[in-house]
Image 1: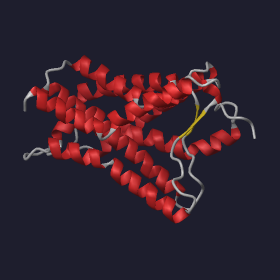
Image 2: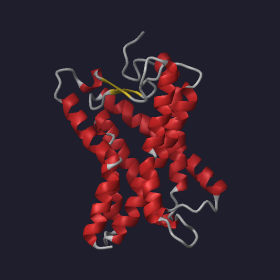
Image 3: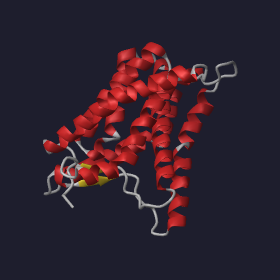
Length: 253
């Protein structure tokens, strides 16, 4: 394809997914940063309830996950190859599930504690809002939905920001480190709504993930690591916030 067509395709894909998230995130951050109340005294809620009626809340949650994954289906369609591996340009081939799972687990164990430390430090320095990643009401389906949300985030971010963007920016002739830095900045930007700490932490994560992908060409370990990290945060947060409310920037009960 021509360069103009490639840029148009990238713009459409990002406009339907994480590029739109980045734009909203920037506006949200400016809104919070310009308020009289300090960032650390504000709370950002993720995974909110979508209805006060449990059946409809569950329906909306499942629909939200489904439609969030449509841009992933789009990039799969765009980069599908007739020959095997069909998803090779996205760094996916399913040939080493065991090794990919262990690698993902190892990455999660390395990145998770570091990310929490960056967040807590940023809140202490008034550079980040207090984040509540589990704002759903408690029902029998709350944990399954939070797991779906974690899978949604891991698949969407890694397949699009790593697999898709790396492939298309290489088609445009970008160098490896230019791609790594650009993708990491995008990752940080669509997390900026939480504050500076989330931006910096996700840029660092993006640099590491981008370097690993450029070196090994496998996106599944990154997806698995991301899903594990988000699952632990989404499900473990209510307990941690109850036991250590001041540590997480929340008022004591």
